[in-house]
Amino acid sequence: MSSHPIVHLGSLRNAEAFKRHLSDHDIAIPCDDEIATGSGSPLGQPLRSNGITIGNRFAIHPMEGWDGTADGRPTDLTLRRWANFGRSGAKLIWGGEAVAVCHDGRANPNQLLIGPHALDDLSRLRETLVAEHKKTTDSIDGLLIGLQLTHSGRYSRPNSDRGEPRILYHHPFLDRRLGLSSDYPVLSDGDVREIIEAFHKAARLAERMEFDFVDVKHCHGYLGHEFLSAHTRGGDYGGSFENRTRFLREVVQGIRTYAPALKIGVRLSALDIVPFRPDPASSTPGKPGAGVPEPFEDLLPYRWGFGVNQANPVESDLAEPVRFLTLLGELGIRLVNISAGSPYYNPHVQRPALFPPSDGYLPPEDPLVGVARQMAATRTLKQQFPDLVIVGTAYTYLQEFLPNVAQAAIREGWADSIGLGRMVLSYPEMPWHVLQGRTLERKRICRTFSDCTTAPRNGLPSGCYPLDGHYKNSEPAEQLKQIKNRYRKEQAQ
Ligand SMILES: Cc1cc2nc3c(=O)[nH]c(=O)nc-3n(C[C@H](O)[C@H](O)[C@H](O)COP(=O)(O)O)c2cc1C
Ligand code: SF4
Image (cartoon, rainbow, N blue to C red; front, side, top):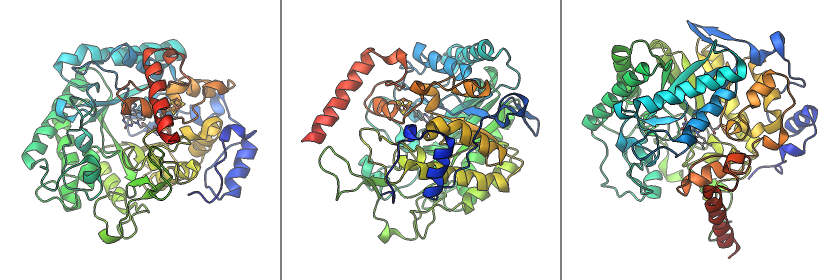
């Protein structure tokens, strides 16, 4: 547990009080007192690097909504979200949301699925975003839009709530959580080659739809990320670093051949630690305690992670991520989005939050420590790779101090671009308001209630149920209320 009580950031009066809080608890997060606007604004500065131009320093992270049609096309809810991404004023749209390259690799039966059948509808997402961006900011100069391509691997649920995992190796903790027996089949090298071809076809379609780049997703426990930790796998795609990165290299090679106009980006869980679970000692039925690491003592050196310290897997180790970014540079990939961990096995690392999703665990640390962890890793990587365009993650928990921290991080070179996730679900215009020097609308600031995670875990579309008026009094909002009441009742028993 945290060594100090967690303070609600909304109760801190100003940036000075926030800085005092950080300093009192030795949390290394930079923070500016005043937000600059106009030509003096660090966040408003365009970024020019190796032929890439991005009009300002805000990025929108990919966020799927579990709201596509059964055959993977967007619905009005999906279009609305992409319109909001455009309205944010951010000039880098990192992927929009995870789009599966094949049906078997969908993370849920409502995930978008790229294919000739969906081309017109997926194109409309980009067009809607561009139109909304122009309406808000009056210019589409420096707007760079990517599409995130994914295969969900271990977390595939293409047909229903039931998982249909596609795994690369057996994992001592994650297999057990998914109920996989020791003889559950792993993807063969032939299966992997078919998936690589699906990425090539998807990229060709993304190029036809005029996306500027595709993100070959390597984060959050999905397939691309699982390759990087496939130390115990034999064959062409496991074991050595060279084999564990063969998937990336073969995907990239095909994209260069079949979709030469596309730029390529990679979103990476650059740091990780062992999976966490609710502390059995303080959990009661229906009431999870604080998160604790899975017992790893008999599994050292720990060989089932990437960016994890093998001798002490509650700590991260950036040695291999540094090798990975070196490889990206050698492959001519300049766009890198740094994330961490996984929402499935250590959500406090991936998405620092005060209120966990209903099936999660209580925060094992002050979420600010989680923010600082991701910021520090991103800073280290930025220092070592000045030629890469590096997007930072996990800023939403900073709430009203997000602009102050974002500005300081850009000014001091901790990252090139500040990526926003949850904040644009609750308050899509926040980046634009910051750039315009407008007072923030405090009632719309994300307070990390995690309903946007609890909803899809219970089969409902994702969105900001507490703060986005669109969901108020809607049928899914009523259903979510009942689900949360049920959890609460279980907790009371
Ligand atoms: C509802 C929801 C959906 C998400 N979907 C994706 C996704 O499709 N692809 C991805 O790389 N990350 C996804 N993420 C993670 C976010 O992009 C981001 O990394 C995370 O929310 C932390 O950033 P934040 O602190 O600004 O929210 C999702 C997060 C949320 C809350
Ligand atoms: S539901 Fe809304 S307030 Fe809660 S974490 Fe998601 S975006 Fe933030």
